[in-house]
Length: 81
Ligand SMILES: [Zn+2]
Image 1 (cartoon, rainbow, N blue to C red):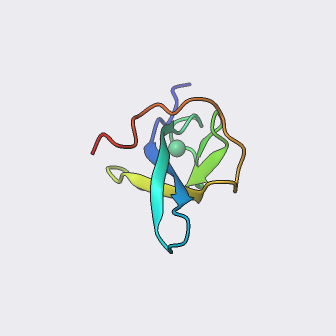
Image 2: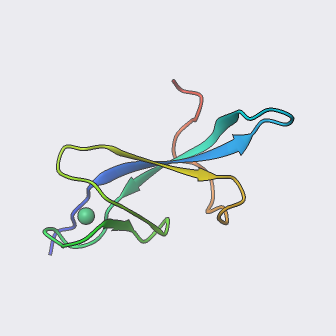
């Protein structure tokens, strides 16, 4: 059974001290690993994230640092853009 493979990006934000500003600290590429044609939200079991998204839509998820345990090195450089 092929996987859904719907893509999303997870960005971990970090509060800048003494400001209300958050900056992107890490960025992870997510890919739904449920079976193709599944119902309900997409899910990446490697990163333990779920998201809503339709075909052709690229979802960005934001999580504040400390809300969740880290899971290794980021896949992408958060400063690349
Ligand atoms: Zn999916």
